[in-house]
Amino acid sequence: MTRSKTNMPFDLGGRVVLVTGASSGLGERFARIAAASGARVVAGARRIERLQQLHEEARGEGQDILPVALDVTDEASVIAAFDAAEAAFGPVDTVIANAGINIAGSALGMSIEDFDSMSHVNFRGVFLTAREGARRMIAAGSAGRGTGRILLISSITAHQVADRAPIYCATKAAVAQLGRALARDWAMKGINVNVLCPGYIETEMNEHAWELDGGKALLASFPRRRIMEASALDAMVLYLCSDASQQTTGSVLTIDDGQTL
Ligand code: NAP
Image 1 (cartoon, rainbow, N blue to C red):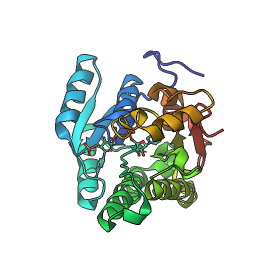
Image 2: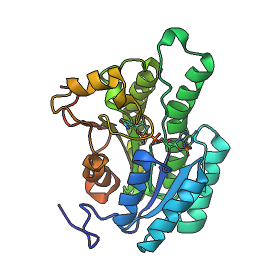
Image 3: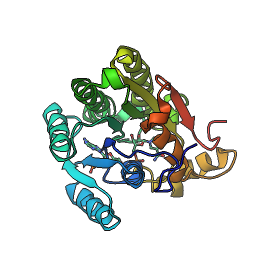
């Protein structure tokens, strides 16, 4: 494993990385570690004030994180985010399609609006983000260089269903298969598409769940009886975004501290 001067496990120097859902949780961490690894980073989400704060903090550490207002469900917004990225840093060669939501509850009482919201953010949004990224990479000549990287954030719930999350689980399974299909679609375009399925990590998405009976029972079912740290994903995320993953495409990788055992 090569170490960059930033002391991160993979060097992303020279890369332009666009991360969706970077205003909190995992996406914010991905933006920070990409910047710390030498990339210029475009951080997209709807809560622009959060992204502004991330930008300021990164700047204090000599890193480039550009805040961009982005709604991944809206194609025009996705295109505008890539335009802003390109204007600031040049063509994006690395995409982390991370934005996602869960609206908990049984399918029986779920409104069609909630069904659509989860489908639109978690699946349509990932597709729009990945496709726009691929179009830009191809236009910038990725086929000749093999440097395009697209990482889709799925979940262990793609493989193992969770209580009170039927549509969330289904969208995450769709993302996993979409990643494999896009990897094949773009195999000759110099773009690698991979999928990461994290286990449970405490973020705004689930922060109150662990105090509830269902959350406590879930935690007790994990072999190590613990929620994962977001940092457990760092090395894999950076590898999949780096030149080192040149022959890794179409992989669906689980990192879950054994939670699904
Ligand atoms: P989080 O803290 O709630 O982050 C979700 C992010 O998605 C926020 O930045 C949010 O930003 C963004 N987002 C939501 N709707 C959006 C939209 N329409 N357009 C653009 N951005 C949007 O939760 P998280 O846990 O970090 O989740 C990040 C990803 O990891 C999700 O895909 C989730 O399914 C996945 N994941 C999480 C876990 C876990 O245990 N935490 C496990 C496996 C997978 P705004 O509201 O500002 O737009």
